[in-house]
Structures are given as C-alpha cells and as structure tokens.
Amino acid sequence: MFEQSVMLPDDIRVGTVVIAASPGLPTATQLLCSFQGTRFEDHEVLRSARALAVLHGHRVAMRDVRMVAEVDDRRRELIEDIDDWIGSRSPCHDSDATIHAETLGTVIDRMAWGWVDANQVVEIDGARDHQARKRWHRLAELIDGYTELIGDLLRGGRRLPDRG
Image (cartoon, rainbow, N blue to C red; front, side):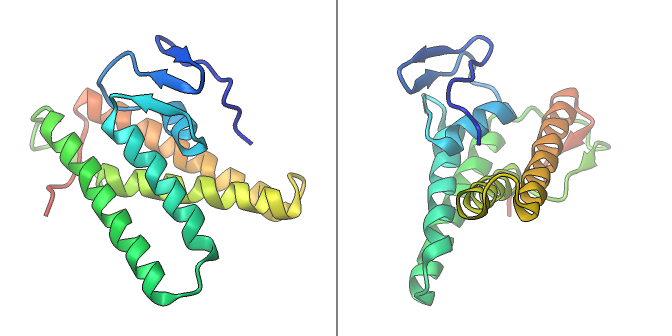
C-alpha cells in the first residue's frame, strides 16, 4: 500500500495535512496521497479526488440500487467540479492539439476506483495474490497515463474535451 510518509517536492507537511506549493495540476503522487487520506489545503481537485476515493470505497459494499445511484450522482458532481476547475485555469491551446478522450475529472475518478480496488484486494487476499498484483499493475498504468496526460497538457500537445 502507498505510504503517507512520502514527501512531495516543495510541499509543506503539517501532521497529515499537506499544503500544496503551487495551485497547478496535481501530480499523480499528490492524487495517491489524497486517495489515502492526506488532506491538501487549498486545492479543490485534491479534495474532490479524496471524496471520489471515499465514495468508491462505500460503493463497493452497497447492495441497495438507490444508494448506488446516489453515490454515482455525487461522483458525477465531483467529476464536474474537477472539470470546472481545470476549465477555468486551462490555457487556450492550439486547436490542432490532440483531444484526449476523457475529461480530467473522469481520469481522476478512474484512478480513485483503481486505488480502492487494488487496496481492497490486498486487504482481502494479501499482497502476493495474483489478482492483487494485476490490480496494482493496472493502477500503475493509470498513474503513468495520468502523468503523460498532464505533461502533454502542459506542453500544449494535447487538450481536454469541451465540457458538455
């Protein structure tokens, strides 16, 4: 499992609260820390990411279809919050840049689910289980994809789809 003791460059750690040094796009490490419960002050995306992980964790155990629908509605709201945040800060890029298939909120939601899923299998079957390794590998792929996406966005080589 991911350790909370990971220090991030230019972050100030106070207990389990991390104050983000820049208001920019969160790194994959910051997202993983937020999924785990580290609180990032003054960063809306990281607060929303934490809420997404909590909702996915609750959703796993739910059997009531109406409750699942309520959780999914709240997830959609958080995804929209993330998309609104990035939309208000995203520089206008060349219209020739490749459009990414998903919004940033959707990408972070998938990462939150991947983190919950990987941790759940470890808790149930142990870290050496084949399914646990597969799920951690999938989470690593999501992390790599997110990191690549953020780099492409910052360089202007890719842009996010318009918010509907």
